Length: 230
Image (tube, rainbow, N blue to C red; front, side):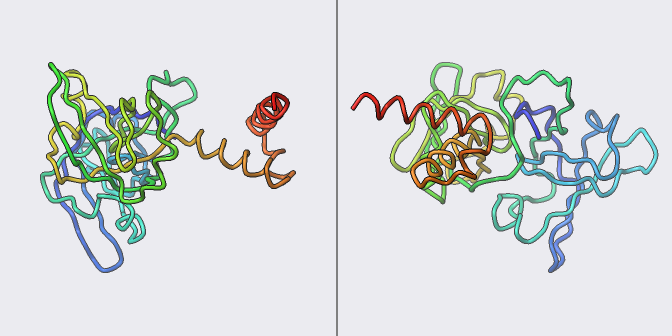
């Protein structure tokens, strides 16, 4: 699990692309002080596993991650080149302050930047996801993760959504450096998926879905309240 608060920007120092997948070597000393082999780390919003630390003994300056073919198909990681920058975040701890929102690091879709325009000191980005069905989980003033950064949605259309990067955020994430036509990884807020699943269960009479937890019971009560008004 992650919070979507990017800790630092790393640099791809080396990449290997055999037929079985891709291995990235990422230089990022600041967040490796407590790193261990097998730790989860978010790279542009994708949860990956640290397979090597360089050097093997602390202080570490770089780390390696392996990327499976399925991950390459679903994310923008396969388009990375040496010297490209990536957003990095370590997995959250029980005592971590949650400044963003809960992220799994499971990218839902890749989206293309279709517009980029200034608004005062801020920059407004418009994204068009490949899978337009994901837009049903995106709401104005809701959360969305773009390359692993937790951002607030400012507008939603039939095939796009927009976010605004303030000047501070522009210095902390790689998205600000991207141009129209570039692609980003998108993870929608998981709460919307749970609500949809619970609502489907209610409408279909699926007791297992309704008994999945407090959220299912909340949905059940909301539906009953709306039906009672008719």
